[in-house]
Length: 546
Image (cartoon, rainbow, N blue to C red; front, side, top):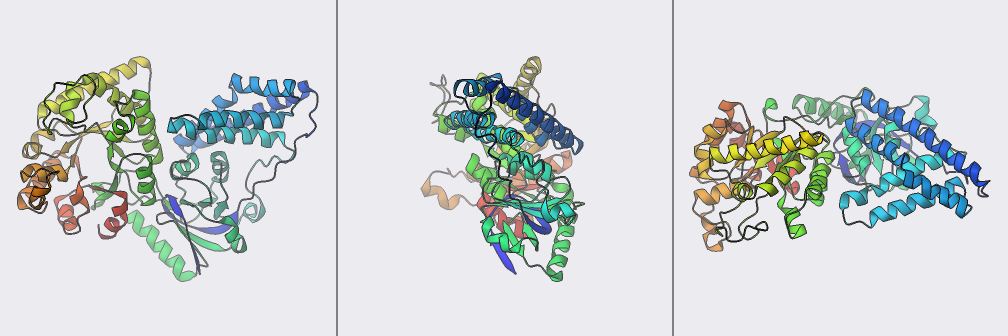
């Protein structure tokens, strides 16, 4: 038995034969260019064929309800219709005497490099999309247009198989994923790449960072892919297969992300909410930005329980604009492919206030919803960005530092204003986005029965709840000894809040440090806590004992 380790980018377990995808080398494609008119006609014909191919894939994605794949392909169709791209290709064909293939390659690299030079992280990532579209057009121009990755033994019906590749373009994965791919292993790629996102959307376990050449000797062998831990186990026997089947069955019974694929034993993410209905807490992640998101995915997080948006403020040094926020929230929502992403509105303290807030009370407790409601234009801008991101997956919004019913009602009123603005602009969003609150003050816990009528869910911020309950400032080292999260006063407030949530039928999670406390896991389960959200590094250990 041989075990290969890599980086997990799509959760689940899969069984299949190893198949190495070797992309056909593209033919020279007329090294000596023909007449410019003939080359331009060849480009137009190839672009037309590429559009037809992508439309077929859009239809297939729609039939299997793969919304993310369909949206990605629609963006490719837009690129193929870009007049600037065609104009530059034409200029190189007529002005420099290049063949259509060389002109497409040159222009696509130019476009991709422009995107890579931008500051916006999302736009930089679109450089891969430009290369993907151009690659498809050049394949069509080539004499060795592959059409499909299915060749060799996998075309002879030996699937399901684990596809091994140096890297895989999103369109290649969509072609290969027609009921034959149980898992994906690549050398290049990340959890937030489009291929990684699509793998999760399609329910295909995947890992990256693997030397594919090292596996050539094992092609055709049966193997198990562990997409949760990033492991490929080659040389399975009947005992291994039995363990795998047992694991898949347990995942389904426990409500973990899973489905028994018709092509094999894949147990992969479906994007469903795994909370209280299964009698054990779901394990979510607390994140701040892309690196945390990738770490959360590698750790097998079942969602994001706390997306700290303050990192955007700190990164910009000022209040970020709507587009910057939208791209950051959208990236997280896409990365988790339908699993819940709870976005907390700015919890900016008195030392970090929006422009125009000078002269306000500089108390350290002037933060969260208090600052947001005093700066409603900025608040509405953030809510618009969150709403726009909600059109790409399952997003929820959470308001911090709540102490009264009035604050929740006011926050929801601003949310309605943001919704109406988007409706008038024709911008899509989730009309029924869930709105929750942070319970991090004794005041909120004590009126949790009243707040439960105003909120769709609670999230206990136990760090602040402990500090406020124990009258011990979190940043005062002299008071650290009094920050006792096990104090019965703190636990009673948590239990009171959980009881109010259960009686009102709303969800409740914990996103503070106590969520990872091994001494309290059983007690939280007994209280009926639906979700525990922790640092990505703590997720594996927490999943073991939940």
